[in-house]
Structures are given as C-alpha cells and as structure tokens.
Length: 272
Image 1 (cartoon, rainbow, N blue to C red):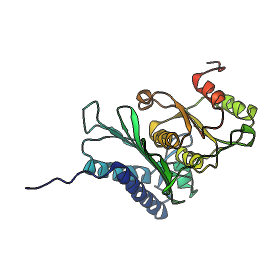
Image 2: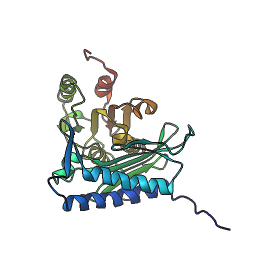
Image 3: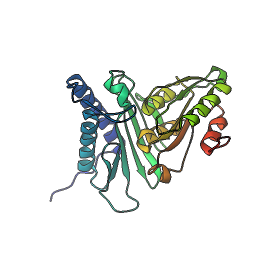
Image 4: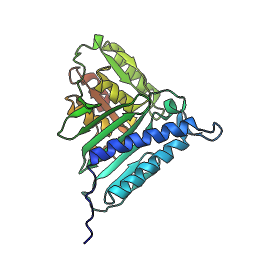
C-alpha cells in the first residue's frame, strides 16, 4: 500500500520558500541584462523579470505541496485550486520594493502569508540582502531570526519615528494631510519604499509606527499578523474587504497613541 506523505508544516514551508525565492531574485539581479530586466507598470511602478519568475517558483511549490490551497499573488493574480468557501489562500508578494531591488538597494523583501476564513494564520517577511527573517503564526507569537520580537517601548511621538509610505494611487492632497498629522504630532519620519521592510523595522524596534494607503493585501497581511502577535496595534479595513480592495493600514508598537492615524483611516477631517 502506498502512503501519501502529509503536507509540510505551512510555517516552515513559507520560511523555506522565502529563502529560496530570495536567492533566486539575487541571482537574477546579478546576471541581469539591463536592456530587458526592467519594465514599467506606471508612474514609479516597476516590474522586473525576476518578479514574475520568483512568484512562479513559489506558486509551483505551493501547488505541489498544497494542491487544495488557493493562491493570490501580485503578478499573476488569483489561482483557485479549491472551490470550498473555507479553503485557505496563500498571498505572495514575490519582490516587495521592486524599485529598491532593481537599484541594488537592500530594502526589499519576500512576503508570504496564509489566510483561512478571513483570518491570517501565517506571515513571513524575509529581507534577502540583509539576511533577516521575521515570522508569526496565529496564537504562537512573532519571531525575528529565531528570537521573540520585542517592539519599541517609546510612547512619546516627540521621540518616535514613523515609517510613512506613498504611492501614486493616492491623491496627493491626502498624502499631504497625512504628513500634516505626522508633523503636528511631533514625529520624525522615514519613507522606506517597501511595506515588508517597514514591518521588519517596526519588529526590530527601529520605528514606532507604520502607515500607508492604499496598499494591497499581499504587501501587509504578513506584517499585520507579525505585529499583532508581538503585542502591537493594527488597524485596517476588514480582511474580507482587504483581500479584494487595496486599503489603508496602520501598525504601531502598541505604546504610541494611534488615534490621529485611525482618524485618517476613518476619514475624519478630510474633505472628500
């Protein structure tokens, strides 16, 4: 009798695939043809041939290991392997921070998460050029390179740093309203150009707050779980909505007062 081996543990699988994907992305960048490596999807929105190749590798591995899990990726969209409404779904951002990646800046990430019944169960963020990995499993805590994540204890905005990002899908006036909120509350801020890196910096205690709008689920679901499991604060649109529609996201160390940024998400004080 032939016995089918059980599927691998999803968290360990995601961590392993993140490293495999990172090595592939680094290799493709080292051997790139500058005439064909990069194309444009829009204003400051780039695609490299590595983005698609990396996602394909991850998708193939998921299909082999978990043939009943659905897949949602940035480059190839949704693949339905299971019509059961309770089926789990993998979210993949093969290269988060493509603009940084293609310019040989180390602030880019491989981001993977797993969602079931509108609950994020697994989140992994790996920074290949910095060899830093952060992960979480629901109810099991958050870890960075094997050690528990310890968020910054700072609770005063006047000594805090916020990671604030911007993309051209957001009206400029709303971004300026966001920056007004940052300055009025006394924050210093950084723009890192990668949601995964912002998550890692928050997990490392380097920043106290991360805000971006609008952003896609595959960019931030891993981060939302990691920061929640580490005892931080998160605020966003419902997971069921977020899966299909980009939205705002706020993550903090759980010490900083989030209300000024929650008000932005809820539309308070913004003339639409």
